[in-house]
Image 1 (cartoon, rainbow, N blue to C red):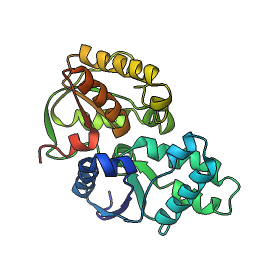
Image 2 (tube, helix red, strand yellow):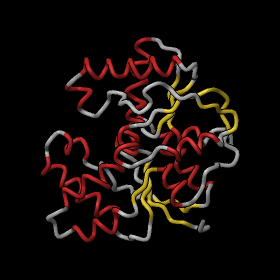
Image 3 (cartoon, rainbow, N blue to C red):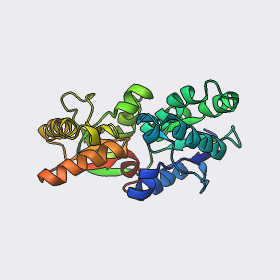
Length: 246
């Protein structure tokens, strides 16, 4: 691992507004493993809400801005604490820029975009964060974006397996969606809530104290259900776990 790997961090809008501690913990972890972290305060959204809702022109405007904000130096990695947003940039942007004069510029940037855990394991070769500790049993939620869009599965579990005090208990139907899906949760509230109920019930059945995932969006959805139904389980983003204990 290079001693001064330069990382431009992308903080998704909902993480910035609702889970800033997770963003700061990602920075803490990246600096722990020797990265030089940089942040462009001009950054905003990746454009996923507009794109998924069918507002392609509006999504293209946001994507253009993202490209301008993050493509000044293609030698820098771009790392985010959200597989959902990484999947948007890595995959959906291909449709947005396919007939654009900016396609070459996008292709260069596309190769450098990573979710936090895959950056740690696949790029830096890091599978242990020294000093990370958290006591308790946990079950892991594979977000749809991480699993299906980014191919992330083993890496987060390996990192969590090296957190002192944690014990993994896999839940039933671990790869099933939690029901969030962005605007899906708004348009199909009853179905979304039923999916959250199933996911939380499966997690509680393991006897775990924590549901851990790469995506704050999934965890936000599950946490809302947990609080409303007074369920006895907690949610944690993996960046918060890896930053615990030191």
